[in-house]
Structures are given as C-alpha cells and as structure tokens.
Image 1 (cartoon, helix red, strand yellow):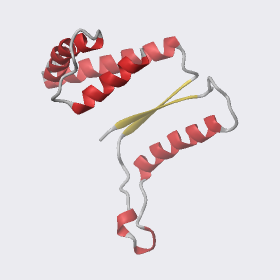
Image 2 (tube, rainbow, N blue to C red; image 1 turned 180 degrees about the vertical axis):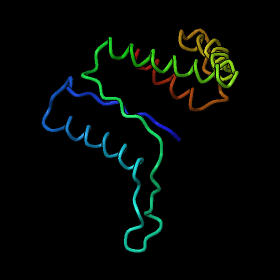
Image 3 (cartoon, helix red, strand yellow; image 1 turned 30 degrees about the horizontal axis):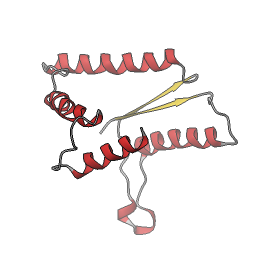
Length: 133
C-alpha cells in the first residue's frame, strides 16, 4: 500500500534530540519501503521486499498555512482519483451511517436520555465524558 511520510525541517518544540529522532525515523521508514532488506543469516521471516511506493513531504514547519496546503493536497488527490475511477468519493455510506449514529448519540450527551445498552464501548465513553463535564 502506498503511503506518505510528512516531516518538518524545524520543530515547534525543540527539546533535546527528539526532532532528530523523529526525522531519522521518517527517513528510515521511507528508505525501508524503497530498498527493503534481504534475509539476514538465513532468517527468511526478517526479509522485507523493497520497491514499495511512498512519498516523503518535507515542509519547513507546521503552520496553519502548511496544514491547509496539506489538506488541500489530499482533497485534490481524492477528487482526481475519483474522477479517473469514475466514482463519487464524497458520497460514502460510512459517513452517512456516522451522521445517523451521531443523531442517536446526541441525546445521551445532553443527558436527556440514558445511554444505550447495546454498545458497551460507546456507553463507557459517554460515562467517562459525562463524568468529566
């Protein structure tokens, strides 16, 4: 699966060598996907094929302008792929389901109704949220 790595030349929180460690890992993962690794000492389970597509985006620093440009880049990418594949990428059934479920959950957030009893995960999250408000 293709992936993108996004890094920044300058840290917003320069603490010790944390930024250098982070950027070393960005570049290392990009390199691992590009070149892989041959099986060391006859251990085939440690072999990793290279030639995997990825992009590494290196921006100056994370600013509102940079974040907006990245969002625009990905929106344009999704639109372009959808046009090529002749699909409507912005009409997603999962998004519609999320909207329906959000309307069902909203009364629990305002405590106008007790939490549902069919979903222990959401009930636990609602209880935790209401405990802290």
